[in-house]
Length: 80
Image (cartoon, rainbow, N blue to C red):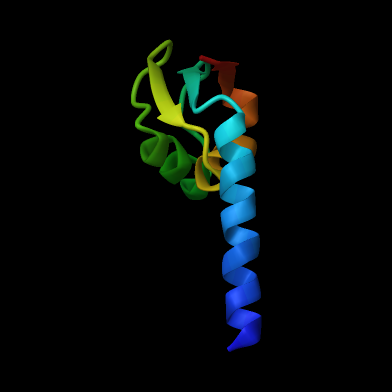
């Protein structure tokens, strides 16, 4: 029980630190999704990107950061 409580406290601290950073990211797809690995295509779909030069604004969360890191060679990322 104590371990679960400590994990929740750690999670909340990380959440609070994340709120101090920029809340949104502007992500632009700069290369085509064709000929890419299925996992990379899925990341683009998860980020909401479908066309070259399309820009979306997403929340700065660890999940979105992981998808961005996986396909970083195809994206341009800016803090909003």
